[in-house]
Length: 578
Image 1 (cartoon, helix red, strand yellow):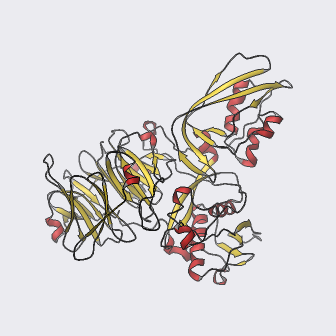
Image 2: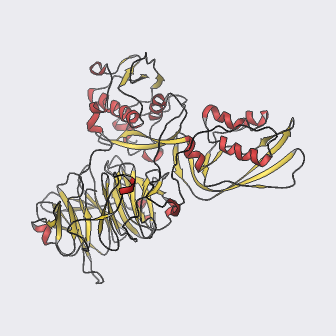
Image 3: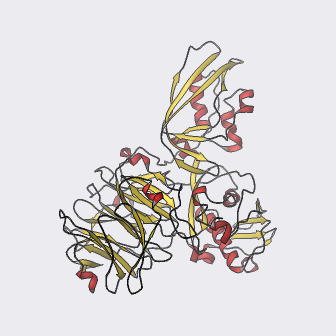
């Protein structure tokens, strides 16, 4: 039985949804997006194509494909392009395939009343029920037949499902996050969904999506406080400011469970720009009398899915160990960690109290790597030795250190006692991804694990019960990047930062579902990039020259990679929580 069903309450779909959302990320103007031929949204006004009198059949098919991106009322806009019989029988729910660009070619001989066209395209993903985007490659080929009725061409033969070009997808769909609970029930995990832009009941639709539960890959990794028996219905707003969500069939919850329920709903609505305050009701009565006037994010601030992060305070140098970064420059951190030599990479625990450093022989020399771990203000202790080390990364919940050693063994190191304690656990789900595992990092909720294998990026889930990598949950993201990845880090709980071997777009971000890949600024950075880290709005990268910092929150025109005072021309690696 999954943790979601054991610890919390099971959930099922409670009704038919009209899915809607607005807003999505766009390509930064300081980047060169043409080098990454992948998903990246752009601002495009929504127009609804309709059949044009005396329209040629090939142009009608193209307009049909555009109209198919509008999902409202069972693709009513697209059904206008079909014969009445085809409109009645077309199964638009079978599958939604998003393609790079649809190429159309005539097949067979066209007659006065018959025409056939083949649509060929490169697939970039599918949209599963519930708005779940799944990145997917390969080629698509479908045949569409037309007939002339009453002097006008209409489609009378087409396969089940929907095909849409990605430009139309980004015009008519937007990404919104649903939030589920971590295994401990004290934090939130984003589950991105893509929903149509044209639904006035956005809040109702999103809460109804919450009631369907998480995507399958997260089923054994997260929990929810929306039980199987609930149905969510639009409530009369009575002209009051904010949004009312009325849930029927919700059992009486404890004070803690009520807070968890509110956290899921409030953060889902607030991050989707649904206006607050949020009046949460059970069968028309306030869920909690203390919040009769409505909940706000401040009432569930401890569940903030994007808590603030401290910028980088430490860096690791090969010759001087840990150094502390100050406005005036870099200086030795002091203590035993400054005496460590041969540092290759370092990482802080989420609470900032522990640090781990991988050391090794000088570049070009053979020898084992050593993983040192311990309190930041204490003594380094040798945790293990190995020929290769991927990671390390700290688990945010139990504070253990994870690393894949010698390419085959996934180990967890418990620190804080007299000596580090090493425990080996199942590495199969990671080893299946490729032969060369070059990087791994746990996200800041302790729910997902990002892995670089054979230059490709994968994201999978960790079991709520025990924390082991869950078989069958790892999927490649950022397929258009090929096998160019060298390192990965979490910018936040829904966004990855990836370092690459390329000179063009050497650092990119990828949404956790793989739908959006965006290059970061290329100003003053030279690929290949070998290390990457992130802390809030700041991203750090090690290129051919030095350790660099990028403020992703700065005005677009001011996004330059900058050297760090005191570390110019010095080989250094970022040390941040991760």
